[in-house]
Amino acid sequence: MEKPNLDYLEKLARGDASLRKKLIDIIKNEFPEEREEYYISLKDKDFKKTEENVHRLKHKIIILGLEENYKIANKFEHDLRDCNLDRVEDFEKILIAISYYLKTI
Image (cartoon, rainbow, N blue to C red; front, side):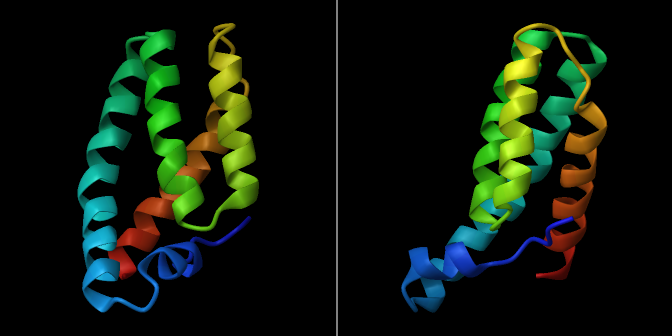
């Protein structure tokens, strides 16, 4: 499984330490809320809302350099349109990896 990294974020910041910190802070603040909204919609079996939540979380996935996991998330997002939860465990692993990583940076 891929490991989150800050390579893409570093490119966005272009060496600007304050911008880098600002971007990291945004991710650290937004991710837990978005993750929680995802879990609530999943528990409620609100597939449309779950799809929307996965869509928002995908942006964090790609920013954290998880290109293969982004593909999994994208497929999961599309599966949700058909009320298909086959990739829910794979997506869960991605969320766990990101949650752990954000605690370390």
